[in-house]
Image 1 (tube, rainbow, N blue to C red):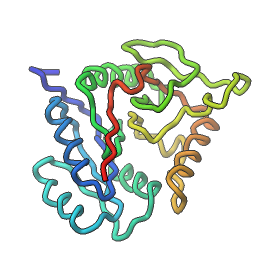
Image 2 (tube, one colour):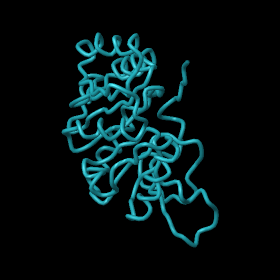
Image 3 (cartoon, rainbow, N blue to C red):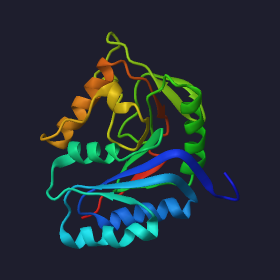
Length: 219
């Protein structure tokens, strides 16, 4: 951090987008207002309608992002895969376009990025959820390590991975495989979640799970 500016070297901000160009601009503006600067920004578009695609093309220079496109809609799995393929940095901050970071995000992200660098066994750090992961071991700065044991009670223990905003390493595909394409988005997410469990993935969870991002769905 320098003078209210947060410079996140080694991190690419990867945003998946489909027909919500105003939400995308809102997200990019929010990071700019918070003083967040990433080594690279990639926007992966899933065949948006012409009026939204034109906004993306026009905004590329202003917000300094690389646009990855497809001629037709191919679903969430393909959109994440081709976006991640374009990433060239050791870490990826993955965010869908309808989220907005809160005021405390930059400092907390700085802390967890250092935790990830210090602990190479960690695969992801999760920043948003609909419910608290049930089995957590406190680490630092509001982040806890998710614990999975098959004999622990309840089905919520399986939800260690989520498509909600998270930080991950550049070896994510080699560790857990690519996202399943040609199926509904919730199936894509479920299959990645199961792969994460099968490969014994490890990750951090922010206990105030709606404190770092707001989800603002727009028409």
